[in-house]
Image (cartoon, rainbow, N blue to C red; front, side, top):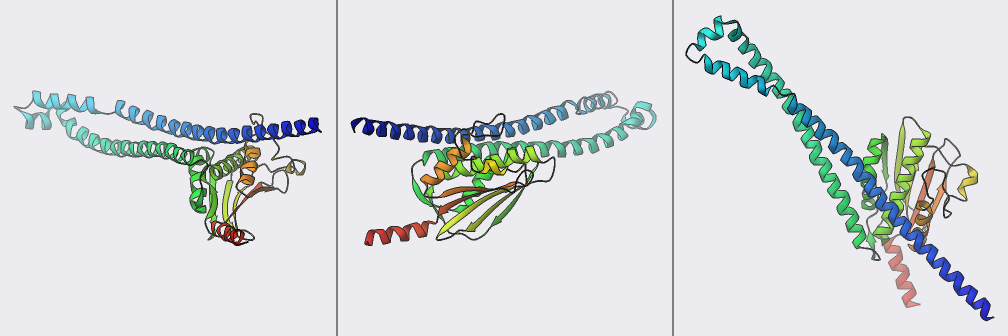
Length: 303
């Protein structure tokens, strides 16, 4: 009897350690996603900086300095120089060409500088968002479903743009959900990243990621992430949330497993549906609505 009790306690400890390892792996997955997206934005920053540097190097400023020096040399007979000297006769045409070129170049450089500013703001936004979610770990609160979905998209936006993934939003009116911001973000970021990988593997073009919010049954809210990518074979549907299961060469199988555990901890569920290879996949996260959860708590308190 004592041996059985010890084995039972050891098994429970092992289960707790596995759950904690999966939770940490899920957090690492989100952090990896943040770094990946920051890296993508930094690539864009580098491109803009290169374009600006090339534009400045190719500027006709030096030629303008030479023309100004030439005009200074002929300050005493400027009219004669501009009308009769072959070099002077070229000055008006040069100034006209310089004016047009500098205007066009100014427009291009301003556009690149604007892009630089936007990308810097994007990096700040990603980092601030991650810090915001990290500092609220363990806090259960009423959360706006649209904000959660949009934040998850922003965390993945650089990668989605880089891989030319179109985004479709189908947001129905839904009540707030009850949960931990960090855990919900972890799930949604993982689902969107997985969809991006599925689209990369399954389609050369016309990559579409559809995000949907809709009311679920009995006071629940559904977060749906659908892609038209590589799809999932039927034999993998029952294993896809298992610890360590992955079909990607570079995958480790923690993301979906930790997401399923996080959904369960949030009193929700995470399910998947696919019509097979080449037909995309649909992941559905169901979470309790905040109002429904509050009503259930009141009923339990009265009982």
